[in-house]
Image 1 (tube, helix red, strand yellow):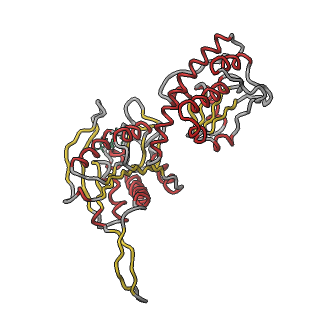
Image 2 (image 1 turned 90 degrees about the vertical axis):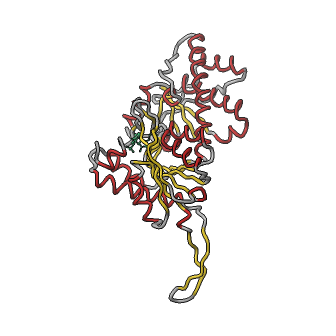
Length: 367
Ligand code: PRP
Ligand code: URA
């Protein structure tokens, strides 16, 4: 994973963040961690010749008892860095705004450090300050970067079984769905199209068997899927919007339903209906819900399926929040999740940002 810290001149805050974070990785993850991460820093107004400020160097050397490379020159932030780094972390909101407005406001990998770790506030500029001022900056960074490492470890764990399908066709269709001016019928069609593509990915390791068939030319052993061993389970209502699409690829699969709605005040999922095919416990279940917001509906659905003895579960969803994915991962380590996009975050009302609004309402025109 490649991470870039960004401040103004790349002589104080970002370079301190780079140094501290590299040390934390070494301390907590050892050499294996060092290999997993590539960490650097840059400044949006760096002149390319200045070196770390003397008080920043003093403070780093005081806390880590080792020498900072004195010849390291500051680096100017540029657009290639946006492509080359997985995550770009700025020290203040203003730095993030400048990057978005100067490069592209739709960039998805730029965050304020505090925002990324679910804290608030900027890291104030210690430039020209006393050693004490730099020590305060050190402590603030130390706190936030501990949280950063926690979060990245969790994300990495999640990533092993979270598949964000980055096909341009999926992204294109999802972009039209996100647009608030897209009408109900088009929204429904797109939801089905994307579900079909996600299903194609999720079924790539499904069990197959061989059967003798006769082509017009000769007989052969042909590979087939036992369609009846697969159950698509839709979380009502919005999961219904994925069914037609996914049934196009396996029309003889069985279908189940779990009736849940999210209480808008508590954000908790409330169960009102369940109906499963016979023998569901022996089937490969693919759970369908277009939105993973807090993750509550999916966690409850998995719990219901597990109570019915189901052992094999995969999740298909259009848009997930990082918070929802974390929650599912915390509760169930072994479940694969296929999504068309992982969005930025949840807002205070539990909606995914930027998301697409209320999926159920948009599918059924009940807005
Ligand atoms: C939506 C969506 C998910 C749930 C996600 O359903 O379809 O099921 O919210 O939110 P969560 O991850 O926070 O649980 P909603 O409760 O709006 O019901 P609906 O599908 O009947 O509209
Ligand atoms: N449910 C939705 O349909 N959309 C959201 O953004 C969150 C929950």
